[in-house]
Image 1: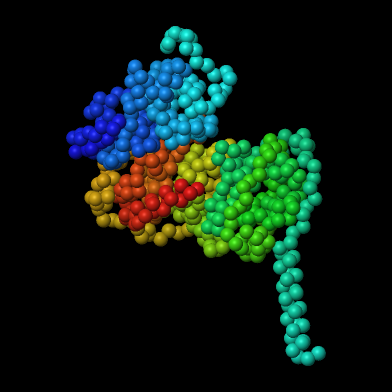
Image 2 (image 1 turned 180 degrees about the vertical axis):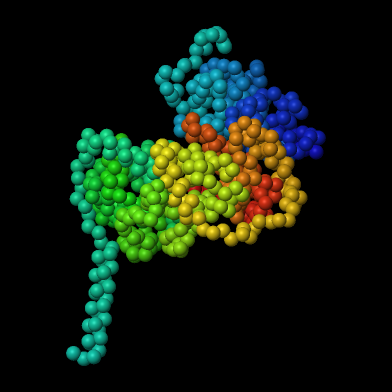
Length: 170
Length: 427
């Protein structure tokens, strides 16, 4: 039996000890926020937080987690009550196709949990492992900057327009 | 004069003479500062030649801090004697080498003396650069003096007493510095001679790939026997035939220019930036390096640690490691992984790190991985230091060694993992 503590809830799963954490989250616990991207630790779509660290859940076997608590995007808020990062991502319209977003938010959350006021350089270095194929990195970073109390950054970066149609063509 | 006073006088003369010699050794005059030469005073051809020299010398690797401006210094180098910070070699007047004449620059490279006369620490490989030709030094000067000046002061060195007293370096230099341009060996061809000049001089390969003695000099008679730098093993360069598949000239050239060799593995740690530099120089230079390196091979004794006994991953460590490997490593390193079938990456069975005498580089690779470097993501591997504890790293090492190498098990793997992780965190 594999014991996992995910978002504060304990689970006992009868699965192969070499199962990647991502598969356990998605297939056994029905937590579909974290995505399978490359399966090689190259894209970050599967990022979750294990004991305070952002990790690629596609590369971590469930048997290696032990007592370390796992947090996924489902712990940050709900559709009705999104958490601060989720709210900022919506305000900045940071998602294009959305596939990378759960991983992006969890990596950012790991940084802000440890250091609520990172510098711009710390932010960029920390976010480097996660990729967005649609190329919305500038909006993703703008959203994180808002929560991290950082200046808006590049003046040419899109500014949030709450009145614009949500998710519409821009 | 009594006998006693004569003895005293004689002794006095010896002491005074010794002091005079010591003073002459330790004291170097300043070379007058100059106005920074105008960039236009160097012709384009010389600057271009200088770019090649500076790349072959890997100057930028040590003289650039993480995230810092090129050549502006500040990179810490951990030595057994404390931490030394690389200096600013941009042409900044106040903090760089802006007021150094060519004469001062040449003396620094040939003798390890700064423009103002203070002795430089041998972390700066002047004992190798002294072999360079006047032309190469002048070209490097032209290139560096036409870089963007950066005003940046390197942090103060943190060295133990008495090594923080620079004049003592004069005695170190008596032992280890043998100044002089390399004289070509007429019995060898031009390619070999060029290679020797690049390996022994400009490229200063022996600085990392040789064991150091107690006072930080390269051990006499052990050049290229392999060393340790920044926590990584710099493998022996004179035992390339001992690899599971002996290195060939083509593989060496490919490795040095791309950071990857079929049948051996990928450059990592401090070697990775060296290969990025060598990717920018003409191929003939790298061919020459490979020619010379292949000519210095020592006859190999039959490797003692090759085990003919059946390996197999039956130990409890290796069994635990197999589970971790299946989830974390097999996607790329497993037999059917696309990285090997499509990407033509070598199997771990040929890996230099997996077949090494110690688990050092295998552990370092698992802990640190090979990070992104802008668009250059060729040899990327994620770091596992945050995912695995020391025992899990040791389990993985035991499994990989037992499964992929014909050589006997490594010793003290977990204690090595503990130590390397601690050292990496302190760096």
